[in-house]
Length: 332
Image 1 (spheres, rainbow, N blue to C red):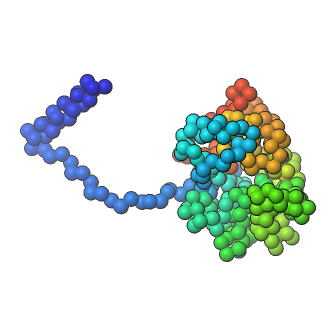
Image 2 (image 1 turned 180 degrees about the horizontal axis):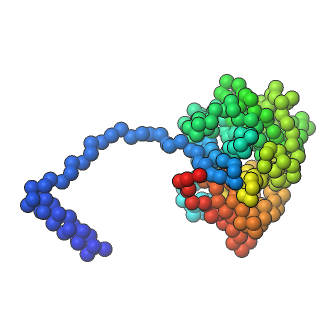
Image 3 (image 1 turned 90 degrees about the vertical axis):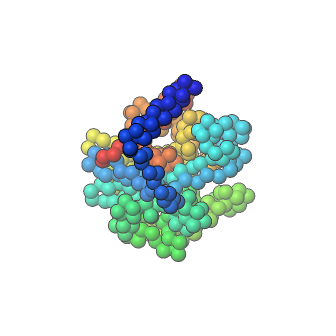
């Protein structure tokens, strides 16, 4: 390495000497310019047959890892997984990525992100869906369907603007029937009083959907819920948690929603239980079934909590799985 550095320095000195002999001057260094201080818009388009799809980044939240983030393993193991994924020490980073599907006849937004009310509070970290839709040239008023995978806040809060008005005023709101039944039950809410996280989830559903009850369409599993979009039963994360197959012609992708939380933890370790799962054992079983299917089909998989743009493939790795992110495609 020392010899290489010496040759580099000698070559540089020779170049400067040559410039002096010939009367040439080294190019002037550019003057400093103000730093931008902002990130580029977060949207990425991909095709599924004749459908144009867009991954819309709602942001990513980095926070100190809770003691029971991985509920069934010592925190030390979870921290080691975070460090292996080069996350900030002692922290965990969770991205959020709704999907926009343009079928040609319908414009369908799958999940809505954390909502603009969280944008300022998080200093721009989350709640970016509307601004990234705008950057992608999409007016929220032209979205036909808001299709929800389940009723957790990071998927539903984007329905409302900061003042409570509807962010997608002309869209039909579709929710899994089983999730709606669970989260709107007063009996279930009463049982959750002793669990702060679940108590907040029930309160958030009540607040988010207040006055919208008659406008919400409940859908079942195994049905075409929008053109080319079929609902897939993937319960466990919530009782009605739903994934989607988007198909056009011979092409298909699987939108896995929250079958796994961040793949660096729960795809690599499918038997780990994230603290957000309602029925951890069922979620574990669902992960194996879903990813066995995805790996066997060599299907393209889209993950709400995958690193943006959240498109990749899943391979079996013994009793585990690994995510192979798709290469960024400069064309559509």
